[in-house]
Length: 309
Ligand code: CP
Image (tube, rainbow, N blue to C red; front, side, top):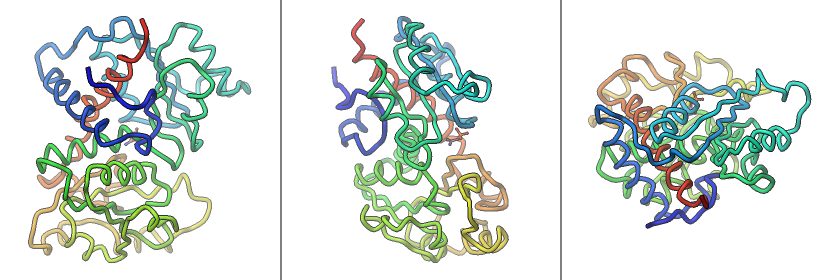
């Protein structure tokens, strides 16, 4: 059987093109499964998975839990807000206590960059990074690429622009790695204050004119401004941000072509994207969410195959 080249899913930067291919082929199978009347397979009946969320989440948390249950794994959930982390317990102590309950795989979202890598070196379980601070969100990037492949036939050769707050976005960084591994061209577009200085070292061009960026691309992946990660003001006002970088029907209608619109959620309607665009037939936002379950089933299934039973 084909195997992933990695023992954990800590970031897209640790994957190679064959890994992505294998994840997508496995996800194709699971997408068919979750569209059957009985949406469940017994593959992971002997596996226990802990979902540890130290940061808020709606889509990722529910999507992982559903993926695990569709694979028949036993699932336990942990949210930092209601846990003994508030009493001063360390991350390693918290996780080792959970692992002593015979847990095989840990899915973790954490506010600190590198939290998943750190954990993978200190505990005996498979680790899946569900978002670490401003660093990586690998399953989001995989489901984004999977959705582009589904909509346009392939990712190779496609032109993708990522619009918005690139500086604070783990979705942007993981998408850049994933898209480039598959042979896509990537540009970013946003206020210069929200573009990281290292971006050119990743082979990514910057376009600060939204109209030009949209004229160039096949797909626009639109990001939310992450006010919760900002301790200073990066642009004068939300109104000005929306005027310069908000996607609306008027700007799309004037392109003379139909581009694909994506957004990882949560959406701030009327700020980075208008409702008529988010809900239009150009938008694949809800397809992304649907594909997230199949892609996460694939990642969990492939990592579980490496566990000695
Ligand atoms: N896209 C994403 O990570 O959404 P959540 O924060 O709701 O999980």
